[in-house]
Length: 343
Image 1: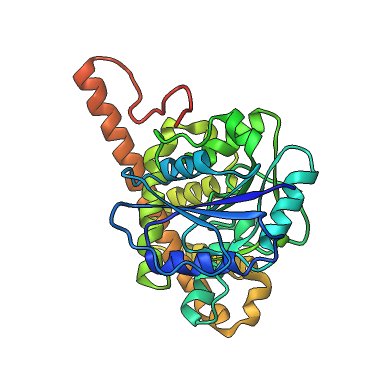
Image 2: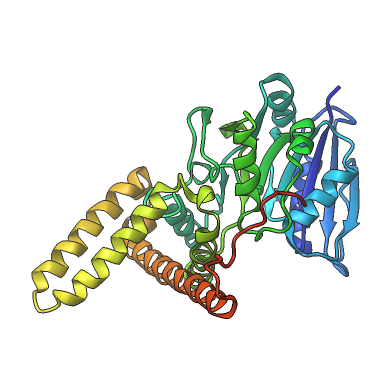
């Protein structure tokens, strides 16, 4: 019988307790599921749910990739699953993971990771997150069918990998930024001939930052990291077409608006085009009055934070490269990742 080892990179006790409770409610066969929580030193783990086998490991390195590799090394299952501590799986998740990973061709599996809480701050954050002109990843949207996807669409917050494939790939690369380790693993998996797949049967509840300020601050920070890191790993962003489209559009629109400020009609046309694209992208979510009223302006604020963050990150990367070149007298690229991926 196949066994599923769920590795949780954890640093938040309250969220970890909810994740473990979700695993305790799984409808998997007896003995087919183990949980491994890898925590920071001093992190307290609340009461372990009855009926769940949980191993608690400590990692002095806070990098999620190191925690995941540590948990995978201690795992006993032939199928590995990775969850973030703020991701809660529904009861059928583990049984589905075992069935898919054990009976199909070699693949890395994932599912929707969405925040389905009813409070308006989370409904609006989820609508913006899933907008095709913002994050727009397939894992942030509802799925009607299983499909082959890109390396950005199966994040490590909800990832299932056959152990043999994971070991053949060498695990996550702990030398890369935590923002790149799952992209890198997916990239290497595809290069090795494995497929990346999503299915709604593997959906989890994954907490988002609430709007307005916590969400916008987080998006600024993540886009800054993308801007700073992407020049060193262009292969990991080669298929990020929506990201490129949004930032190129902003880079064109902002100077144009400044140049044409004497002609309000130009700015009005730009805003009208943006409004049409924003409304069309929300689609069926416009039935939610919160999204219908506040969605377009909130999306605009999110795009503004993303644009400023990404541009700042690119400037930061250029400046680091410039300083490195001046100090060494070479044309070395700052921030380039190691050549061989190993944890």
